[in-house]
Length: 538
Image (cartoon, rainbow, N blue to C red; front, top):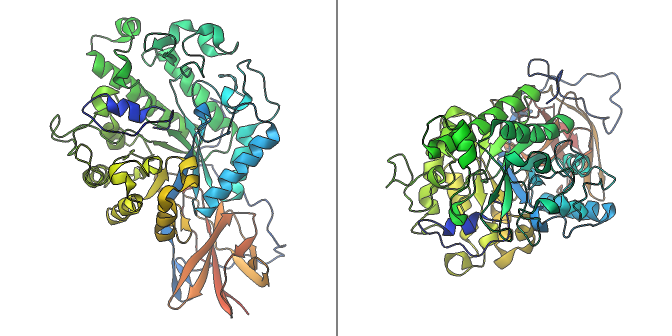
């Protein structure tokens, strides 16, 4: 998915999809049965001795509360400095300032999640015992620390804005191709790169050092366990909300056959090689789901796969499409992952227009909604903001808007946009168009019923005052991860603002005159507790 800069995509029956695609151990941690969300780090005003009122589920006084429920996010790509940081070797202050601006963009778009590339290719944006520091951050391959912890900073800043932080990993990529990356040249790796110690885990592909990259061989169980451990390290050390993969497992078939003869001969067990490779990827996905939930049961696990599982002409269970098939070409049985419940969410990359003959958005979307219907796997759609302005149907500034109308009609639970830079560019005004139509007001995250439920008690509103940026409300909360502020208008109360527990409660755009508000608290899984008793601000 998110990857190296891509040329315009003309989906063919085989290799053009490749061009389109290019670009976690600890013990004694909390279990689901014992997990209690941390109380807010201080309320805006002292709460005194009064306990929160019982509140009413779903109602502000006598009127119902109304809020959109969908995930809205963007991918922030670090590999090759596509989005962030803007170039290698920036100072701590510069990196922080750039990241702040990306969060400002997310807030301006009324997003509630961000997906940050923290392991683009066998490296790390945190001090890791398993991987060298990312050269896309430090500008070097010497393994030396930049002197600060970007992951800790990025998560805290996202949470301060009530944005979920999904840590995005590429499991098996060990390097990026030259000349920007080290390619398959071991002499160019950081001295602490694990593939120097475990050269038997490394596969160079495709042939030729100028175009090759190193992979951790997915067919070697010890290599798979190592890459799982390296990702779970971040889950253990940091307050991530999600673990996220894109579509990079086995490589796309542009470079010829993946040279895994040695591992297949040792571990293949007589299976056809294609099925053995699918089994290897299945094992990674299943084990990551199991190990994340054993470590921190509230952390979400999701994957953004290539948008076609199989074509109908190949398999009657496939989609009405004629493009590259993830099941056969990259050994990703995405349909099985949903059916087995190994994911909390899936984000198929539907990077084609409505009406495109080989992969019609309007035909692929129903296939994915049918697949996820009745499961506990939430469906979000990967949106191709990066293609706006290309020749043909992508020259229509309303294409993304039209696709999101279909998403609403089919009950899709959110969108993730590729990528941050393209959102900022807003070519043809397409981003502004869909933001104003589909993201005009804030949204709560979808409830994730398969995760721990700790809906908090009702908050308490005790006062309100106007100031230059709106109306500030005095509030107390208990055991909430975040809050939702509702304002009464007519026969309902609409969501007007959200925030992380411990941040001040503000209505940023109140109309004149007396206003009535209610407040609720939510847990990490999107479960909303009872609503506070109303407060009228004169």
